[in-house]
Length: 178
Image (cartoon, rainbow, N blue to C red; front, side, top):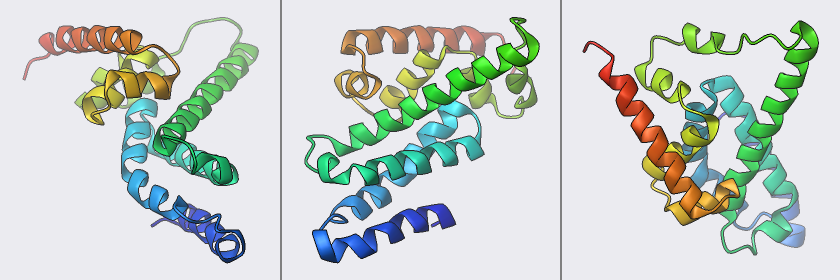
């Protein structure tokens, strides 16, 4: 367990005895840490950013644990929180880039740097929503209804995005020599 995750887990200890607030939170952290981290790595294509997003999502869930633990799907809330944090960072970065270099369009430099990993390259060619849909449905085995709930869109939209993403992956894989 890394240092930040240990800090989040340690936060549960003082309140647990007094209010019962830690009940279930540690189990959520231990159960969802690997899957959430893996999903965020695939979505962001950056392990450091994935780690930061995961920790921030766990912290936000912890801050709202009194309400979250009574939800039908605390795991879905955790994933949706992480995805919302990711979207927020993208928007902030986009505004900062536009301010720094104007409206010019150099956006895909990160994909060129990470050419060593074929899966990340292939996922990187998809739209963010297609990538999120494929990660949730195909890699994490969420149903389209569950993925739609996490993403805040309809299940049919998730199916369309995942289908478009799969088609794009097949087209891109057809152009490689291996």
